[in-house]
Length: 288
Ligand code: PMM
Figure 1 (cartoon, protein in one colour):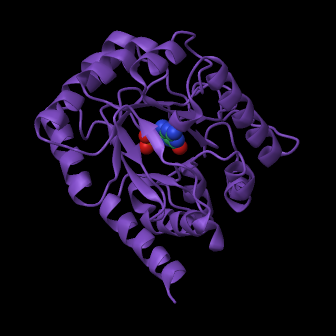
Figure 2 (cartoon, protein in one colour):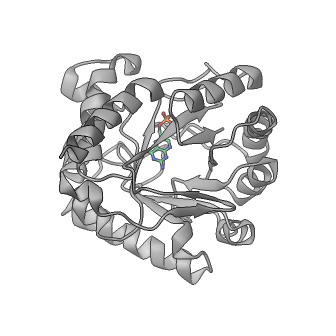
């Protein structure tokens, strides 16, 4: 529980900085996709997406993650043009509406990242950790954007077929350490980098649970740790709950654990409810 106090430096994203000295920050998920596993199709209309983003900010989101490509198991890649068509009007609309919190764009492609950054995004959430597009590091560097480096075994199309590790925690930590070094070698300053063990990305339920249990090992990399547990399939498996929208209490339990274990950014769909979970965790930690 005391881990919550070991705070890395703020995450820099262009002109914005996200500090962690007041506990974990909440990233609201804004999927502008027809097929994401829990909210696909809900915000395909840019106006509905902007409204939902503003609502999440009002409910306590400290940043928003806008994505135009579903990375759910089995999903096929979406072209850069189509991703841009989905995310740019939403990012622009959020900024025009006066949204002040940072926005990340969930993409693996440099062209999409550049378009989103021009439209008003501050960071790139790259689930491939700079492995899919050799141009992405240069875009991040040029715009001084934040960058999330996530672990994934395989690709979204194949990752859940038969994930295998000798020691999942050590392998994920070593991978993320190496990707931090690769980003730094490509000229992206460390203050711009966050890491993410990639819950559900090429992992069994047991792998996900071990990563949550041993979060310290990921925190030891010294970068802010982002975690995306919200509504995920491992919760469904544990709870026998097929419907992602009915996994809120499971999500809340995993988030409470992550908050007390010292995760820095919690990527969630149900911002208002999860903000309450984080507030109670913090109040307990801060009680004197
Ligand atoms: N999960 C999803 C998509 N993008 N990005 C990061 N950094 N971490 C995650 O865990 C993550 C992600 C899949 O969830 P969604 O379909 O609800 O967006």
